[in-house]
Image 1 (cartoon, rainbow, N blue to C red):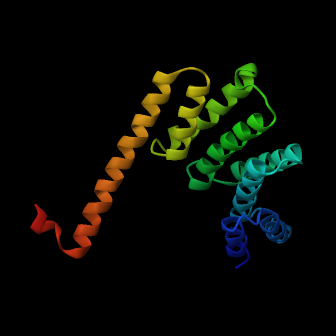
Image 2: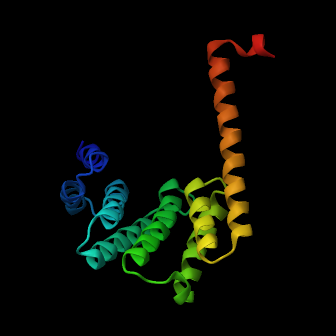
Length: 178
């Protein structure tokens, strides 16, 4: 119930309230990956919207992501999502702090490492593929960005077709259309 409340707070852009709820959950169960995921999401959203306290918000988000990565199985959705969220939050932090992404080769390498790992674990992970395309674009590699975007579009097209077939099957209409 508390986790659902924290998620609802995020949906209503009440990030501070979500953090209070997840803090209570984590006090009782420090290894609660759902609470950590919710906390990391709220912190990431706060980073996009706040003008102050950027460093502590970023630090806390990175701590939450690190905990998720250490607690979850590498193949799990939570693990893969944490890799992508960590990159997304890092990019937002760098943007908010006025940092030039090209200036820190180690950081760029680390971001690619996270995204490539996520895509190695789940080649259809849209967020990771789109973030990697964004990184390629920022680095002046439009061909690589386009290749990732094309894969995303191909995957979405296949998903829409499959969803349509499932809906037709459930309605008993597929045989009439063939």
